[in-house]
Image 1 (cartoon, helix red, strand yellow):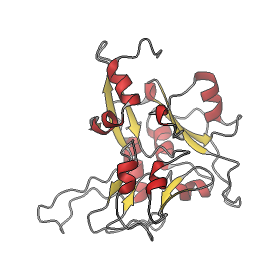
Image 2: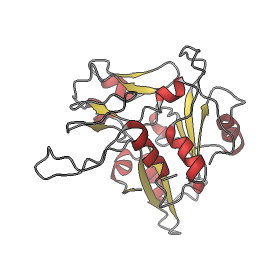
Image 3: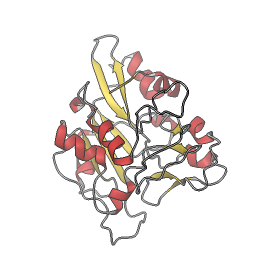
Image 4: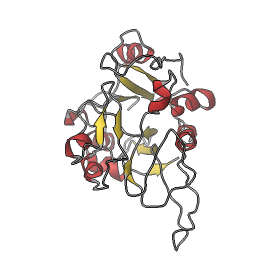
Length: 252
């Protein structure tokens, strides 16, 4: 979509953090070629930069395959918690579905929004303990052992991609340590990536949906993600901030 035809609502989405934060949250998201992650005998280094490319034209409005896969992979239990007086449900989502509407054409686009794994992550800059950090391969993480729950990172993130754990946690996954009183967000399924696998959302989208998400090495010109970007381009949400996110979108 050219700048000339981009209407105000889309322009606001791409260029205004507050709009991103206020967008409605709804429920989902094929892969033409299976990308390779990091061989498990290879050390983490900056010769690669992992990223995602999401084709919103393939992202079905009511599909929640990526969200469900993420919750299952990381034990994000959204069930009722008896330790709250109101038995409220915990809505822990590392991926949320965002819906935007073209006010001129009424065209509706849905897309999954998660941590954008920025090259220059503001969450890392503001963290007083170093709990928020970026690996050399571009994956942004939170060290639960030193996170003090100050939530500065949540305020600094223009994508509102982080959340705070208020509740007691049960039945945690061994590969995804979480902690009450700490901040969390999409970790790009780092354990999977380190074992030469793709993120759970990418696999689920390929298996159960339209293959809207491609995972791969943005630095490798021969990777599928780089070829798709070279052929069709991609959009960085809030590119004006200079954060250079590792998650790119097509169709917006």
